[in-house]
Length: 427
Image (tube, rainbow, N blue to C red; front, side, top):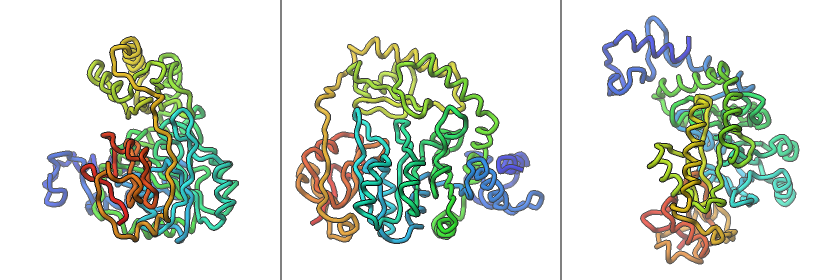
């Protein structure tokens, strides 16, 4: 019996609930946690079988269900590493830096190559160069795919790093490997990777998979999850995790239908490694991505994943239909037609910068700090990671010098790491 069937059967009994959660089924009758049911056994006993089934789907040695998002998996993996240094890309999610801070691990930040205003995943060549200069690093933590559906060459990178750990934040690639039209899943090459089921699969928000292939890492991961995860997991979320891969297995041929529809109706999308990640370059239309988002919401009731100055991104998942793809095409063509009426953006004024490091990440974390107005922070040393969201990629990390360009970028509205217009710096 699946977790979903378990909680469904319990709910159909219309039980008199004298247990948590306190809403007693009012919010959702399927939302239960740990129970010992006389006719179906302990609810927790269903989880290992479900995780094993998911592991088999991804060809992983082990799978752990996460109900605190990919972030919790990233924190767990970094905590499981030996103390030392790891290679990370500048364009990494802030949770990687948070994990380093919590675990006392020094991130060796490698600059991502930027092409057409997009930070590409770290290349095998960039990692090899970093390893030659820093042979003592314990692991490489990659982000692949990136927010734009671009993938790193994980096979080549795994060959280069030798016996060091290859960890992958594959949050946006949980659907990879579902069919031949999609890239291989990160699980194939990584010692461990985290997949955000909720981002691209039919699963509930904040649910994710942590796939582990290395036995030593698995022992540490289990211990850390035992210490850090909730003792009251939502079985509704875990039912969604089990359901998501089962749905992929049963409906993977639908990706072929979507592939044909996307090629037919969205030929103007940016080419990338993931055809389901629709990236529209707005530079030819001189439209600001934020304004494009507002236009589509107001005029077509369409909501994107995110829009920045140059690009607007849409996620198509296995549950979408050809009709939905056509609907998006019609809306975008309408926007292009009315481009002259929308606010423009001067793409030549985009800011290029490369932060300079004043001290190590960990040393900066041990210093006294103070908040100052962002406008007065130029030249000071950052004591925090700050950047733009989505996708929560820092433009400045602790221990780096705040420049005029950084101040200008962080003066925008969609930022993280600031507190009421102030930034934390070293005293």
